[in-house]
Length: 197
Ligand SMILES: C[S@@+](CC[C@H](N)C(=O)[O-])C[C@H]1O[C@@H](n2cnc3c(N)ncnc32)[C@H](O)[C@@H]1O
Image (cartoon, rainbow, N blue to C red; front, side, top):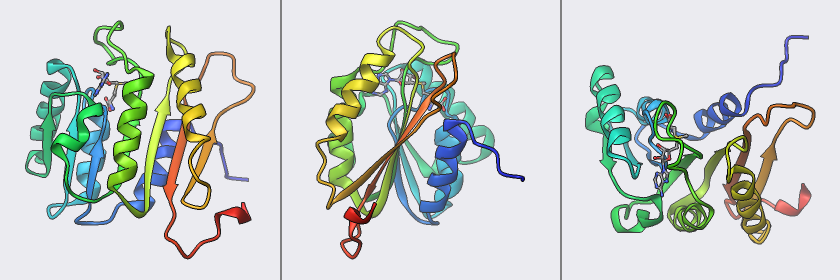
């Protein structure tokens, strides 16, 4: 009786941890205050690399400070630009990309992720993703635009070929305060029959 349902963010971390190996190249599409970038930097190790994007200078600088504090700055390339431009910067194949949508905690709540750009970034990450790799998306629906953003992303993800990708949505059905939801996209390895789900 020790199993407890995890929050979306913690469940996302469990899955990401299960995929990333030492030496991997991964992308944080929304660096924010750097918590996810730090988590990824620890997982890829000294031989790996994290590309971390954010449109706000303050977010990139917060992330830089956090990385310097932990001694991980050498494993991370910080990019102050939108995730919709990922392909301008990342040429490597990746095992994982993470999105933590919405506004910068403690920052300007009017600067938020938007569906068109997130969907463009997801498409880019799908191109870069190695077989067996994953994209993790944590979505917050409590702020204006959040629900519409999630709906647009889900509609797009429903169009992905089930023979190539598995897409899952982890969410609480009976919680009142719009808790975050998790979406995981897994790229098939070729040997697996996705239709068995
Ligand atoms: C919820 S926060 C991310 C939290 C972060 N992962 C952390 O661990 O602290 C969302 C971030 O997305 C950023 N953002 C909004 N639009 C973006 C875009 N087009 N490209 C990259 N980042 C964007 C915001 O500036 C904000 O910092």
